[in-house]
Length: 261
Image (cartoon, rainbow, N blue to C red):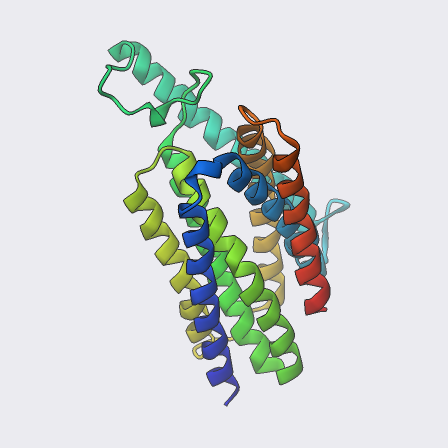
């Protein structure tokens, strides 16, 4: 009966993810607050949830450095390199074809005129989907171990999937993707925990590869939060309310992690 519980919890995560995306979608008049909160949530998820779990699961060292931290730095660097390469390619394309025409959407450029590649937003959202899939796998595996661990993981998954949905929609739309694409990525992110939980009926996932993945994903998220979302949140609205949203997002994840433990 344990796998039944895993699927039920995954369905709860599905609904929480959609709720998070709906919240991000319907507060466009307070975009700076949304981005400030999203940055705080992502920072909290990275530092207080993903990285500690990755360190615990992938504990071995590679040339004196814990594997999880090595992949954390790798994820950060790859996210930076990928974004810069896409920006350079898009800038070169713009130079070849002249300045954007008046009827072209402004979404390909930020307010300072720099180029933004929608592909980066889609790649980031796809990484969120991968993380949610791993959540579902971890949920199923935890219920395989025993009810106590299953309930602890269930609490963590269901509560922070609200942040996942919020961030998936925000990341996709922030980089200039159409609303329909953002909604599709949100739906994929919501369905991923259910698919992951069901997949554990077929296999047992080793702990170390899961921890390595979480470390890599944490590095990508940290880059997006620190280099993109938080600067964008304060670009036109360097307000105390935006800063409080960021701090509140971190504190909220801390509360979730504490309750889960």
